[in-house]
Length: 185
Image 1: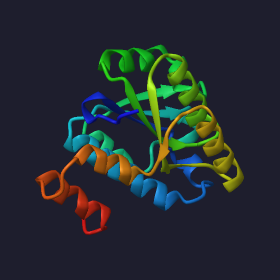
Image 2: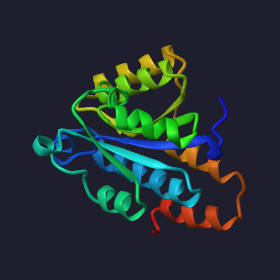
Image 3: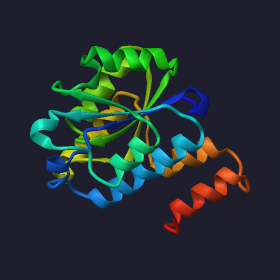
Image 4: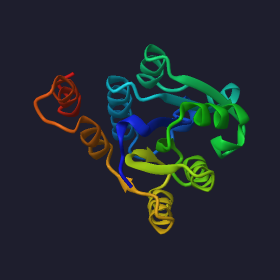
């Protein structure tokens, strides 16, 4: 699979307040999702995000919520574990004209996993940013990563995806995103 920026859409799954409180590696996960959001915006890659039962689980956590709103990402409520079971989300993905979905969010073994399976079944290429997904327990996370590999769903770091999108060092996009990667922004 080739991760062409012109053929990608970024999907952030359920990075919500009450869920986030019990996640492992939340700071690192949030940092890498932020990097992907910034890079997607830099390259005009569409972004959508979901919130699972927001009345009970709260809003998307900061700083992601403000960033997603700033870049006019499409927001969707859902009650299903798979985002693809929501017609509006499926329609948005279909209308995007993109074939590759970069998945991030929580939990890697529930909502991200069921969304990945359904996306693959629907004919999309799926890429999991392994350091931009997490679960409550390390064992759940590791099992999900093993499952993705068994389903031929690529699992790579967010930074690898971003550098693939950048393509060349020395560009303005490279300089801008490198500052975020190095924590200087």
